[in-house]
Amino acid sequence: MSILQYFEEQKSGTLPEKYHDLTQNEMEVRITQIKEQLGEKLFIPGHHYQRDDVIQFADSAGDSLQLAQICADNEKAEHIVFCGVHFMAETADILTTDKQKVYLPDMRAGCSMADMADIFQTDRAWEALEKLFGETIVPLTYVNSTAAIKAFVGKNGGATVTSSNAHAMVQWAFTQKERILFLPDQHLGRNTAFDVGVPLNEMAVWDPINDKLEFEGSVEDIKVVLWKGHCSVHEKFTIQNTIDVRNQYPEMRIIVHPECSREVVALADDSGSTKNIIDKINEAKPGSQWAVGTEMNLVNRLIKTHPDKHIISLNPSMCPCLTMNRIDLPHLLWSLEGIVNGETINQIIVDEETTKDAILALNRMLERA
Image 1 (cartoon, rainbow, N blue to C red):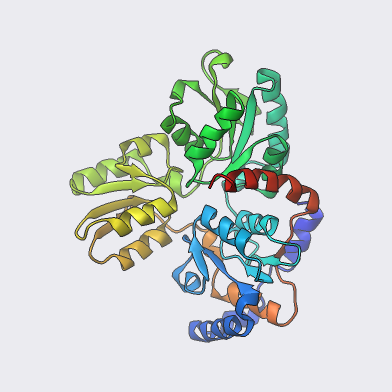
Image 2: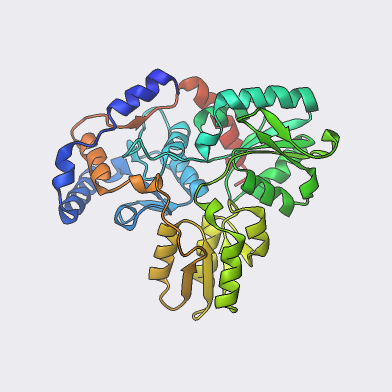
């Protein structure tokens, strides 16, 4: 996205004052009416981390992989209003047809992790790594990344990954080249590589701020280069949190997202994607006890939907993902009324060249999903 495109998007990003004066009931009634009016022309995907008042209107709820697949398969909807964050809406625009329009209700709904790797930093890193390793390295990027990063990965023979299929994609990458550059979440990269058999002492970290490779030992031993990025939510789960749960609830199982640090994942009983966490708890026996290390909106929803189980957040001080939480009823209604009134509000458009390269990376993942 160019600077001009960014500021053009921001112009349409201010919620009109009238939406602040509506009651929740008024907004819910109007959203329901619009959904009925538009029927199959409208599709609302919602990420699991969305607020309850928003997720109730999602036509499909899921994690990043599920929603990417659903958007790719949906050819009927003319308008896709993505209740998630910016990179997810970009992915939907990349995977859908030119006749379909994708909207993000609030342009401020970004992802701090995705922001930790921009294309300029990545180009510099790749130039340095190619000097070190020649053609022995292939890039992978978590879907929690910008369209520009996905395009870079696609152009250089790599693929996207999600937390659901990271193991399969890392194993695939090692059939392509000897080494991997994993963007932008070092924790998911480290946990996944470790699980598929790469020792920690064969993993390096690329610091994009200082353009520096952090590694002790011979560079010839490096198998995985991890981008120095992280999820601001999952990094708040700590070793002390696991110790506290073990002391207070000796029978409680700890399940965490692989965006948590390696130390926390190692101390947990289970780790897995958002879908994996949901499935594990859905399948668990009544009376079972769970401390969950992931986003708080989802944890609260699990608590509500499983009154027969004792579920807590691994970190009792955890708050919801602040950027994901920016999607609220006023912004959702504003976006939907814009469609009905023929206005283009907060449309996400990925340019043709970026789309062409990014779809290579996405398709390499979706073919193995």
